[in-house]
Image (cartoon, rainbow, N blue to C red; front, side):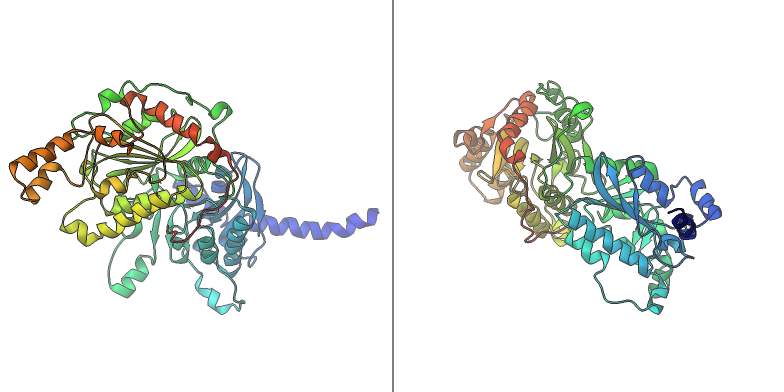
Length: 506
């Protein structure tokens, strides 16, 4: 009936106006100042993350009319054609602080991610809970941090830190699988500089308290740092491309235009890159770049625990997780930061069924009083447990050397669930280097010589007992790993389920 349209008109006009107000964010003046610093506002960040024209907002009208979207823009969309949920703190509204309605939206997003089995991306730039929340009565209910903790190992979670993030907001970062800090303005802290000054008398700026140098280098809370907001969002999209939407799915193989350089090939230049002399350093990153599919190597936490490389890549189009010693740093010895980095990486990637490639070239876990005080035994044990419990196909290669517990944490122990265990000719192995062992044991000259001769035998004795499946020419490395993934093809295509979370730690 024509009269119905007239009755609908004022209601629809009210809806349009309310939506317009909610989407105005902090207003043109604030938005203009924000953008002049080369930053993307909350809605622009979401648009940059998602495939074009796929954003469907949730909770547009949440909160008071004077606080647009209650300073938290949220909803769903597509990344690479696959569904994700996304929320962005809006610093131009109430400093991005969390109001009562925004808290409900944050929890709703995390609960939806678990319910619908889709990844969750959070963009952090806020001051934590709004002080005025205590003046508003609200019923007890789950909060977003509880819900985020429940997502561990079930759906991929990403936190993009786009500015200073404090308190409750900042805690979303260590609860996420992948943390990107967007530019030098990004910061994370339990409490910001004013509260630190008031409570501790410490005068410190945002960058020194919780900037990229703190969390991407020292603490390891952040994984990667980018130049600006757009590159951070692009990196988040790339990270998600290696993962399934949830632990109930398998990682997506590269196909179509993404399937570049997926076939077998020899690695002739590895003979130039890797010195046979185990005392000479080389750059493992260059080896990995040639080993994996062209352009697919993505190193995570490159500035933290630098004696160990953790990276995502593709081999034959199959997403894989790579853990490799870096002989350029500490000769590849595994310190506390490296061990903790690797354990977290193995647990997260294993939860989403990425095969694990382990390339060992180390003199062991780092010894010395400083390392012991820092907790190398605990950290090394955690890394060992993570790789031992991993239920994915494991592909181990000893490149030149592996001593003591440094061999165990890198999956060299025989019959430890490896799909394949390989070695290059000339590797040196043992509990400790033979010269040191003989001296420590006060062995006679004949015993010392026997120990050195045994060490110099390389992989042949272990190959003879099938502790290694095969000793290979370095140039055969890629093809040998591709063959191992073919052996695992049935496992890699079988229906997927979440792994047991017992002992699961971020």
